[in-house]
Length: 306
Image (cartoon, rainbow, N blue to C red; front, side, top):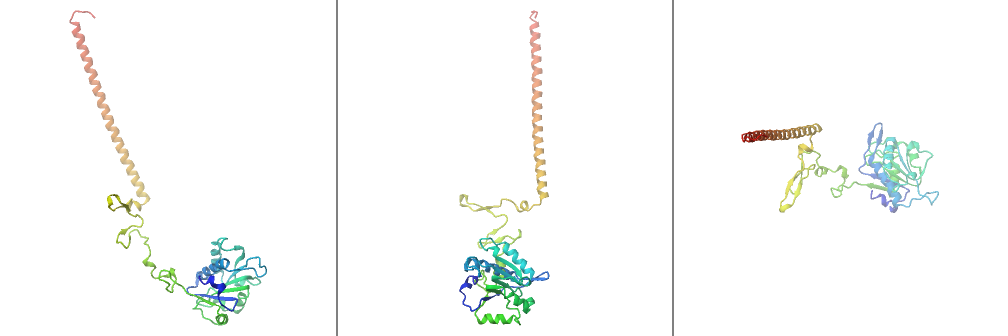
């Protein structure tokens, strides 16, 4: 999308600019065709036009220009509706941006029109002259055409506007550039080296860093720098981390039973100790009574009557 910000200074001799993205591909959604790459390109173009270009209303220069996105297919229109809903008012004045199908656009116009032809393999609706006539006459100031793809056969009537715009330097060929491969001619999302940087989602496949240390993504080791020794300890074992709920419940029940048994044992030992103390007290009491009786008998031998 770096070319979108250069549209205002692009040297061309036409009010229509043709943008041909290299990596856009059509796909079938039910009975309709969609092209998500074209949709993302068109939405970003709308954002950059309002941000970088001085778009004004052709009939009232004090107002901002309106933008109409046209597409031959209803499925592609739904894709645009979803993408525009994700934008904020700070990015695009949503009251000035509208999406319509070509069949729904007669008697409707806008200051700037973005025509998305969608198809990249076969011609489809775009080879019909009446539809192309309606689609290319909706703009008051200027028009952007996205497509056709380089694989689309350029036959009448599509070959005429493409040749016309090429003669007037009004064609922008967008080439994909991979960020990971230093500008290689493919999209980053389709990079063949993506698997090299992919993080495994399986817990049984730990990642190996460049230092050769095996690391677990889900249970990273803790590093202890005490005494200048590096020791790694996992906070939880893999079995505990991935145990099923019923295993956790069984472990809780087992721990509760063990604690209850230990408590009962402690109470039983305390009861036995208390019982032994009571028996000793009873024995001492009996001995004291026997001693008192002996003392009483000795006193009786003295001949003294008590």
